[in-house]
Image (cartoon, rainbow over all chains, first blue to last red; front, side, top):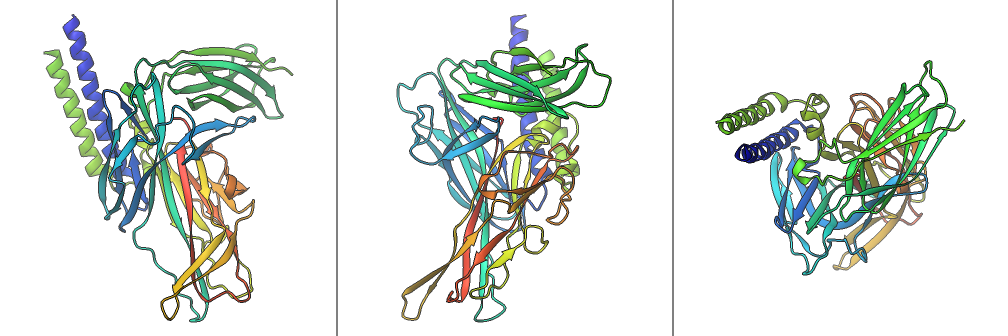
Length: 291
Length: 196
């Protein structure tokens, strides 16, 4: 019986790998040919047991593309209204969970010919005595046309301009070591009604030593538990995060008072391979909407 | 025995997926890929494209020139494609000047600059694949500050759409004694999923 379990786990892992590889290829082939560069996957996870990782960059266009790989530091942060942004910082990073400075990429600069791919490899060389937990950086994949056309003024003595449009895709890199804990706390929740919707403002704090990656689901229910509307958001809480969720009040025979059912869980993230997910706690909370 | 059967099945499925990808899917655009289990994994990839530069055209000394964000020929166009409904943080680094750097007779470097400005309403965001600078489609967000773009939701509620277009305009202010020649600068757009 135990042998059967081992084989099943092994098969499941192998199945996921085969499927992931196929889907990445599927994604690369399915992308529009006008795209500049395509980067897959959207996160790179390293650990003390697996200190190397890889990323595929593909140029699906018919022009050569100049690629540069560098590192930055940036976490999703929110303002008091629940708007989220990633604030990038290239230097003077004081966060002890920053992995900047000890992650290397190979190669860092290249020109990709049309319809070609390049694998970028990453190597973690962490300092000794690193505390248990997760360390973060952003891989910045910068791309621009390999040969830029210089505009020629129609008047020989004229002035012409060119703004080079450069694209950067920021991919999260995480390095994990030691005992890992994924735990989130719901600090505060406010709900209120506007003319056409109910707004929920949800304040969360990470109590673990890894980023809490999961899904925030909100359902707007009437007094008889009839669903009025719902929304769900992919969540990544590194320290603190405030999220604003707007739930439309649709037409229907609904009875007041309304309530918002909030669920936070690490379940259901299909964009991250199961072996990279750290299962965390689950929170369920119901807040009543006051008239 | 079960293990071998399962292994064969998985290999078969993997091979089938690859064959489907190679022979059927490659001619399709990203918008065509939206079915079944594959959806979340396939579309998790984020693609940022520059579809058109901001075009000021020929500029005259002392005469400011506007590139209109709603003009099909002048507006700059960035396109972000990923998974429908996912949030993406978008950040733009914009220049203050366009630079002209040429070598004068005798080998000395001769540099001049021209002011370029982007107002707090110089960006429009559109969320249907067919959007153009002139016609944005449903749920567009207009008159945004390109220096301070908020996070965007790909598709922004338009079912079946997984795109965010950014249409941009700007202004240049040549001086009366602006040196003739070609002036250039970089605009950098950074995009990242906020959920991982």
